[in-house]
Image (tube, rainbow, N blue to C red; front, top):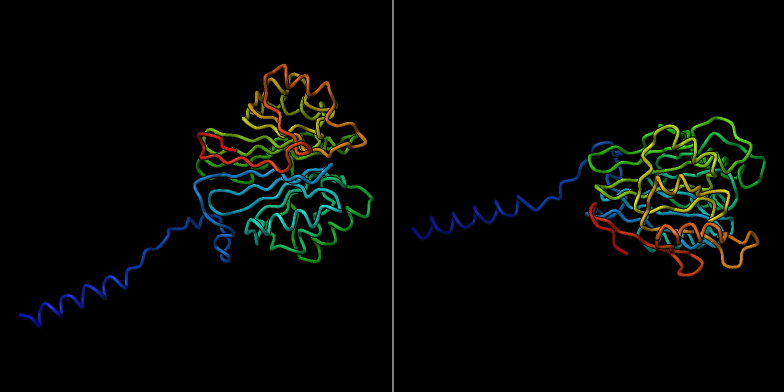
Length: 290
């Protein structure tokens, strides 16, 4: 009898050792390696980096994937790379250059060279600057392929998480700003609208196309320039927060007072990187945390 009990205990111990706790990973649309590029959480996090007069936005998705939207000016490379490293980022599954202005794509080449990159998205806009040529060279050297960022492109569509490009709607613009990729990120009931430097013309086209621009958090277009954030567009977005990515004492006098007045009149909470530094939001799909 004693021998039988000892044998039974041994079998139960071995069975326990052969059945470890396994974290289930959704492999839908994931690369074979690595399966996950970051830490999985239940929250979506959006970081508006303080890169002075420019834009750079890190998005950490609940499944561990990461997206970087813009990479500031050329001199912002150390700031961006150090920030990504400090957050444990090794791979950027999606890298977006909203439009080819130096204060948005300046450090894109450095980011491409430093991190593992999945998909690159850029609008069909070109310029003859060294900054733009450096980005194209980095894409080519790493054998990446750029997808055209334009209205109608769905980057992610997975249950209660979606990333859609709402603009640009047109093919040709006089201003490079209107080529800006306008991105809506929605997780559950919470949405973020990232507008690059899109101006009133692009905003009007997006509204005319019937796009749902409603969002709790709006990245104010063109660093708060009066060329963007038209009254009609702001009313349609109806945000709780307006984030302005801008450099202190910049030569453009951004953000313009007319925009600040417009936001204040609409009782929207304004957050500025020149005043409080990097701004981070976290959401579980129901509530927004800072």
